[in-house]
Length: 319
Ligand SMILES: Nc1nc2c(c(=O)[nH]1)N[C@H]1C(S)=C(S)[C@@H](COP(=O)(O)O)O[C@H]1N2
Ligand SMILES: [Mo]
Image (cartoon, rainbow, N blue to C red; front, side):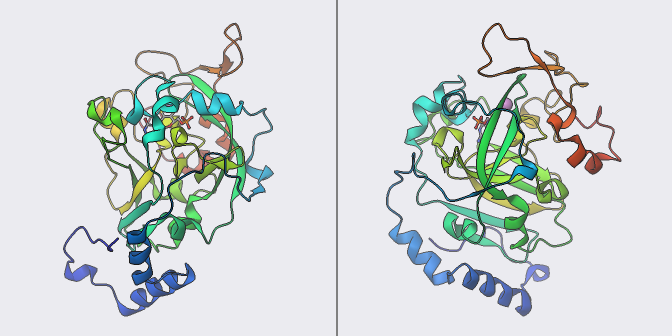
């Protein structure tokens, strides 16, 4: 695997020596040289047989709900992952064709440290935490999921975003052979999402690599996906291969497909309906067909943590 620079280097982007040294220091801290990254990529890693591999983690009660988590069965068989089909049971049925190892992530844009990194080198320095989060889908259902992951901010800081990095954009793998849903044009592929930099750095935002103490199943976005618990589920992009720091707000798949329904912010908001249905209540998956819907909370119940980020925004306009 070569280190890839996708655009020509403008004079303003020539990396000062200090920053270059920092990049080498980062690679060293990761236990890698650029050459070693190259070698590892060429040799590849053994094929993924990770579905039930246990992980080491510490629980984080500070950022966990005390609600009862949904069953492993619910969390891994009722999914949205359009790359494998649009039915809830398609991802569990078809996502085994996704090869999650070896996996690399390209980091680009407004940051001192950019390049192509192995997944292991991005994750290794950070201890895993378990966080039990509510996930509220824009389709008015919800789940409670015990994720295993790391704060996204801890990872992003190591790339040293510049002062012009106002947003972070993410992309999912594009590979129609492994992802048969990409042969249909329900969305513009690859799936793209983004956050404002302060949202990305917020301690609630995590990169999840596992659930229920085990390596993330493919249908849940292996090997690494975003979880932003105060936003509608579609912001939590799966199987990430690109991280891009930008000055401008990035184009995102769902807001491009249907801007009247899916805004860039997509904060969970019971007061702003979807054009075709109410967002005031939600069905908790697993509660049974006759169960009452429960009220949806502003920011999915995380208002104390995140409402301050939006002090100056009209949330009816910036839905
Ligand atoms: N790449 C990609 N990421 C995605 C989606 C998708 O279709 N493709 N669906 C989103 C939606 S709508 C939801 S609700 C969550 C579902 O996550 P889960 O299946 O792990 O519960 O993933 C989000 N991330
Ligand atoms: Mo969703």
